[in-house]
Structure formats: C-alpha cells, structure tokens
Image 1 (cartoon, rainbow, N blue to C red):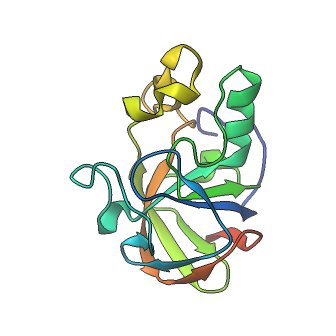
Image 2: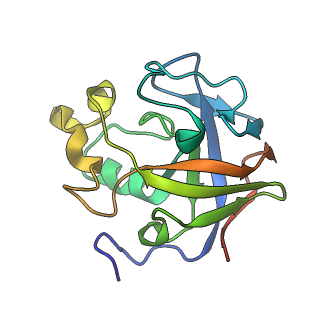
Length: 164
C-alpha cells in the first residue's frame, strides 16, 4: 500500500460536488457541468499561465481528505482548494498518475500528475500551512490533475470509478 492510505473508500465512489469560478479560488458548486478537453465549460483559472490546458484540464480532490483536514482544524471545504471535482468514496491512495476514472456515463479522465499547492489556498489551512496537501511532504494528500479522454456531462451523485 502507498503512503497516505487510510483505508477509506474503494475503487468506486461518486462525484460529491462540481466546482468552478470566474478565476481563482474558492471554486463554487455547480448543479451540473459540461466537460470538454480543456475542463469544465465556464471555469476559469486565476493564473492561466500556470494552471489549465489539456494536461491540467481538471483538478480533483477527495471529500474524505477534506474532512480529515477539517478534523485537524483546517477551515477547508469542497472547492476551497481549487478542485473542480470533489470525489467521495474512492480510496485516494489508488489515485495516481496514469489512473483512469469514469465519471458518470460519459466522461473518462486520466490522472496526469499531482498538483503543487500554492499560497492562494493558504487561508483554508491553519497557520496558512498549505503545504499540508503537498505530495512530496505528505504523500497521498495531494489534489490531482487530469486530462479529459472522453468529454460529456456530469452532475453531483454521478458514479466515479477507477476504469480498467
């Protein structure tokens, strides 16, 4: 097992929340979204020279990781760390570069790499310690970026499962 495995979840879960913004964080909940090869239609990044593009089309994070961070005293909540999709029920230790996820009936994504946290999300960590979700410092606690292999529509409650 990889570091960071807390034995929560399995190989299937669901889309808990879809998050977007006009630029930057926090990203706010949407009732549904169209996903294309550049991510959620209508979502913007505060620093497009750093974020976005086909290899970083979507940012995903675990609801269970957010809840664990809350119990540590961090005021984080879904969308606050800039993730487009808050996923529940997946064993987050299985979500690594190369993993493919089926989201709902249409969307297929492939995890490209772990994100690097930036100071824009510092306010949702006690003491501003946003490095708490750094893959190098705390393996298994990072958000991940994904490329979109098959676009489509998604909504909260849609199945999220590791694809073969």
